[in-house]
Amino acid sequence: MTRNFLSKILAQKREIVAQLRRDSSVNRLCDHALETRRTAAPHRLLQALKSESPRLKIIAEFKRRSPSAGTIRGNLSADEIAHRYERGGACAISVLTDEAHFGGSIADLRIVRSTTTLPILRKDFIVDPIQVYEGAIAGADAVLLIVAALSDSLLCGLRQVAEDQLGLDALIEVHTSNELRRALNAGANIIGVNNRNLQTFQVSLETSERLIAEAPHDKIMISESGLQNAQSLGRLHELGFDGFLIGETLMRASDAEKALRDLIGSAHFQPAGIGISADRIRPHQDAAAAGKMRALPIQIKICGITNARDAKACIDLGAQMIGLNFYPQSARYIQPEVARQIVQTLPTNTRAVGVFVDGNADAIRKTANIAGLRCIQLHGKFSPDITRELASEFHVIRAFATHTHFRPEDVALFPNCDALIDAHHPDLRGGTGQTCNWQDARAALAFARFLILSGGLNTRNVGRAIKAVAPHAVDVCSGVETAPGVKDHRAIEQFISAVRVAERSVCATSTHKSPQCHPERSEGSRITS
Image (cartoon, rainbow, N blue to C red; front, side, top):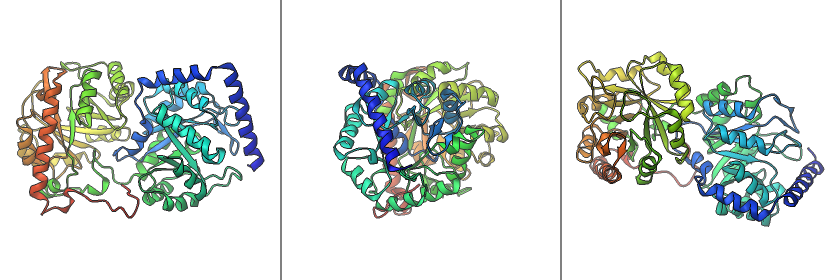
């Protein structure tokens, strides 16, 4: 691409914007955008990229063609690709809305918004606030701002409109050290390093390798363009990149879902449990060491959520996970469509967990996809083969009941899953009010990559349970209810407070034995996980 061609693109875009301004009232579009954003969660892309999820974070892009590659796959629909990207594990979806050069449209963005709960990035040559308003109305959670295409004042103004006025995120794209400096001066929070030179179309990953060394440690850094294999992602991740924007590689794949899953699975190294970094996992560690090495703070899961109000209260009060029950015989059962409505209200760094009892993989997969879930919890007779199959698509929690036939070493048969240790009940799965055998749970730590303690926990006993087991997370259901499926918000607050008190007590008594109780991060280099 020549400089004149880039200038031509921008000139065409300004003509389109001028026509949009003639056809629409800027003030009316602004009001519409503000009204749309009033009920939307703010800064969803930023939250997704900052999430402690162990998955490699990939923004998967939908585009039909590009000036450099020509037509990529023009016959694919936006909703079909969005479904594949969500199932494949994308943390967000980028939608090209430029029509002249990429074959996209704002209609594609609307279609993707109606298809997925993932954060959506509007990718275009944005040169005017009216395009930001248009994107927000269509359902975008973020917009791309290209430093090379904007003056300093316009860059700063567009970022303020997106982030400060509308609660969107701005992914500010740079290619040179000077552009990085300009992005920082404009207040960038998310910086994308484009490995493609927009003037020559030449691609070099050395651009990312060079600029990451110049980036402040408190900025979210994304590498873009030319990313084709897990080795490249792994190397850039180790250098400090927080995520990756990938388009052509996925669009050319015969199976975009599998291609994305393969990139994530191959490049994120040893899978880790919820809330614990990969370097903390030690297979078959002894129980005492497992207790000392658990990542603080202890994660908290509130199960049996049946409505958005209770879900919001759980998250506002400090829980990291909620459980949605799809067992028809449970008093807390909800329809997948209702679950999806709840999930759509949650911050992107909240893990919504679908609870299943028995059933086959296809039925579980269908329900989870309808509900928009990325994490499932399995109770009953699930073999290692079935859980391994599901673990290739979802984050899986395998439940174990501590009855007379339970053997802690059985947890090791499911290395791709987190372990939830629950009480045994002949008829019910969860929410029984019965405590599990804490001694067995403690023994299971030796075989679990990540252990969640469940079964009859409440404000009165959770402190003792934490001291006895030292789990990575705790799960509560009936202990914070006024009736099945009706949460007591005051009880939730008290439960979470009790967890934090016990956590501090455990840490205080073990700090002299385990320096990892409060892991310190060096401020002299970018933090990687």
